[in-house]
Structure formats: C-alpha cells, structure tokens
Length: 117
Image (cartoon, rainbow, N blue to C red; front, top):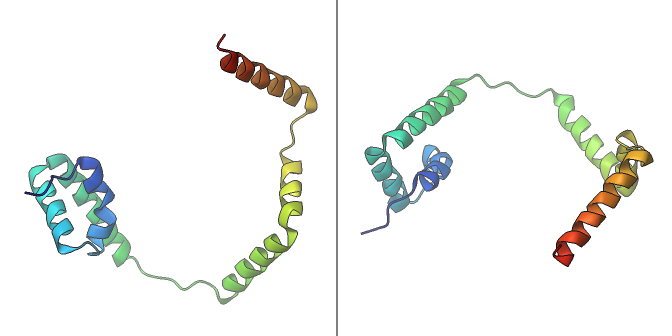
C-alpha cells in the first residue's frame, strides 16, 4: 500500500496535476488524497477554477518592438557588469554616520556570540 500524500505534498503537485503532467500513479495518489480531504479539495477547486479562468482569458500578442527592447537592456546590463552594480548601489547609499555604528554593533554581537558570553 503506497504512503498517503500529506497536505503540503498534495498542494505542491497542483500545478503538475492541473497540467496533467503527473505519472498515473502519482495522479492517483493526488486524487485519492483529494477524495478524502475536504480542505485540500476546496484548495484544488479554487486552484483549478483559477487555471480555467486564465486559460479562457483572451491572449494578446506583445508589441513587436518589446523583444528588441528587452534584449537591448539585457545586453547593456551584461556590458556594464560590476559597474552597473556600483551605479545601482549609489542610489541606495547610506550615510557613514549610520553605517559605521551598525557595522560596529554587528561585529560586537558576533564576538559576544562566539565568545559565549
């Protein structure tokens, strides 16, 4: 007799179950759990209703220039490398007056923890 799936395992398989990507034995275990668990059954009904609404929603094509714009930004990011990170950091820089005491307190706390005090 196969082991029963837990609630967490069953919910983790909802995506594959909805896409019918589970092997037959695993899909049977999910169905068996859903038949005996009202909580997971309600979760599955809600999840599958959401999936059905999304599948029924009209699809729109992305603008033709979108792929070009995305790839241009990706290439620019790759070229900038660490410089890009440095520039990003400049926007979120903390004043030294705040940073030094925080780092000092963290170092003292780490020392106290390691010393067992």
